[in-house]
Length: 150
Image 1 (cartoon, rainbow, N blue to C red):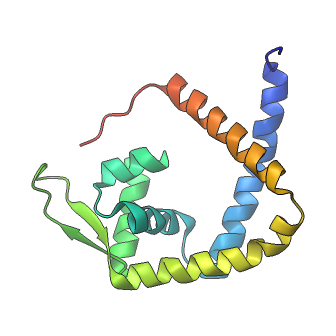
Image 2: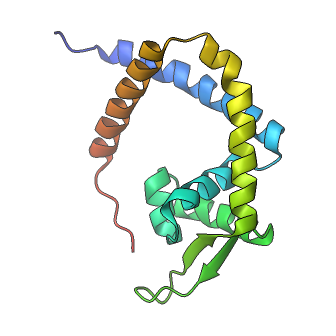
């Protein structure tokens, strides 16, 4: 099978940008919660306690942006910071019950709003999309080099 051309791949990114931006606008309008805060809460819902640098690495975001999101989430009562026995200057961020409830409500609302979109696509189409985008993310991350975080 011949490799894709750079122009073909650029078309994928041309579509991903507007898709991502519109989705972010829709999510923020629906929940009133910034998408970065939502991403942090959603990660902490499944990964428990993480440092800001680790959250940033997992989400592929800058540490500074994640720190602002964590600060906003802490102000909202959705996360707490606790001492990290492994790294004195990098506390562990944990989700609160209030944060868990909030992210659960957001995910339920998102699932409801995605119903019409899901109905327009086949299971095989979605599976192929996830497979291809996962592979693309893996290659792009490998090209950017390893990240080091505490």
